[in-house]
Length: 404
Image 1 (tube, one colour):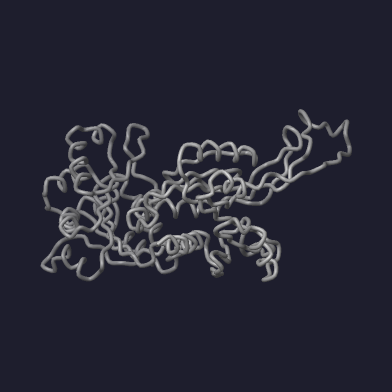
Image 2 (tube, one colour):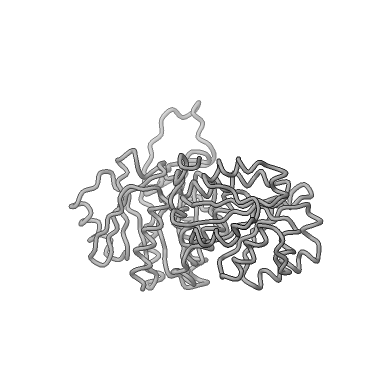
């Protein structure tokens, strides 16, 4: 049953009904992981298997994966119609899709349960997302290429396969999830230019030793992904991070705070930036003098470090681009109302200040969870403890509401 894993990774797809169609590609076994991954983000997944798919894996596996009965054939119950009456279907996902299925849909042939459901989805204007999987020469076939172009011209979405070992392999489950989320998310940030810093920076003592902090980049990455699926053009400046850069986002690696300033100068000189989000753990201090090479402990058994503050990037951004809205994270060790008011006064040039308490072990640094308070326009809004992707969604909800 799927109830034990529902929303285990987040609730971004909680109210979504996704009809997951499987066709007779050898990679059909991957569909189990894809369905489970969507369920982990809260989706209700209704599986549909073609006759060829049933020859490769058992429908029982898909019922177990999703918690829903599998549509395996069309009977007098007209299952291809009833599924749209029973559920408010948000998307049809065909993963994996054979070349045969793609070409049939493109040419109006509806002779399987999958092509029948796709035909109705096209007629109803319901998003259709196709993940091809086949041998590479089949994927390069000019007839298939033309059919894919035709479907794209009608608004059908495709997930590019991974070309490996002479095969067009089905996309990974996390990439399928990203494409589903991207298609189903309203574009209230469409056209906005967003720059986000994430992860921790380093300030070097010598060639190999450095000062840093425990920031993992999870919060910044979540903010970048959320802005991207809401239609923004996102540039991510990242230091040391744990995890992967979100899909389809321009990302530039920055080691030190000075590296970040250099990249900021390049970006801001080329385009107008609407939002600058400072979610990185910028190292606040750096050695006044950096040792050349590597300090040899056999020769030097004690060193003294003089530290100086690094530049405040949020202040610098406001100086070079006053019209840019600055969203600054402020990590405080122990948070109270007096300190919040003090910081708001000190950072009166910042448009949104997001406070989080890093003295707690259950949120913030190195955690998948956070709890924040947003200060903006003489208002205070608390976002209770939640996964960082949910926190990111609520932060952008506040900002999108304000810009309306």
